[in-house]
Image (cartoon, rainbow, N blue to C red; front, side, top):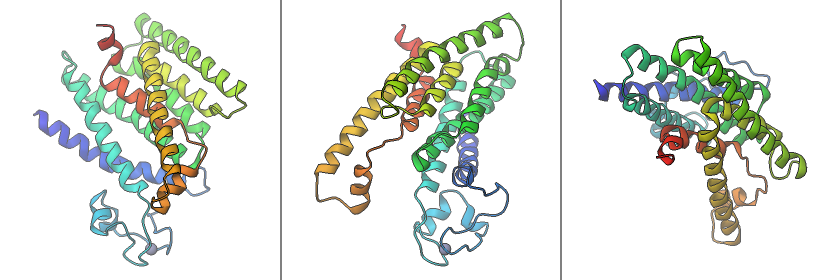
Length: 272
Ligand SMILES: [Zn+2]
């Protein structure tokens, strides 16, 4: 039974991922989420075959079949990342001993929804250098509801859980707000402060704090890597352009750090 869960998770991740791509592309651009996808260069409406996640990208070798222009690697990246994320979420729920079937499915599907908003936030920040308020508020709302949905109850324990989440998110928000305020927005964006509030709500103080620390470590490694790349002259053009960008969006690191902390349950592991 277990391998089927992973196959279904990865399949669902690929399909949801291709929808998330549309959200990243069209959100706040005046386009609606309805209507079939088109090639961004020649406006050719894409057929069913051209919309199959990952496969169509590989089959067309990353180019539009009609005008030959290059398709953004965002598509295949978001699809693969979402599939991976969905698979790991299923793995964490399966290895969480004591969950009954109904609880397992509820936990997995709910966490997929929470993680999907995070994937969109990370990809949107990477692409547009901003975290839209509506997306981060949606993430906060889902996080705030998590305890009630996962426990399937509305009692004292869930209220305590929510209060702890608000307190955790509040502390992280204050720290990031200070980074934003005193660096005049150079070190951190205000959107990052709102995002860590949501992460605190979702994970609680310990796991969220570990996630944030991982984000800083990842950010430092990538940042140093980009500085090294900038010095090197024998690089392909795309890479050089990437390394010349001074402003690195931080949401992808926060999301990655928080997800690793969540999946590996690092708060509990490190506490022994
Ligand atoms: Zn085209």
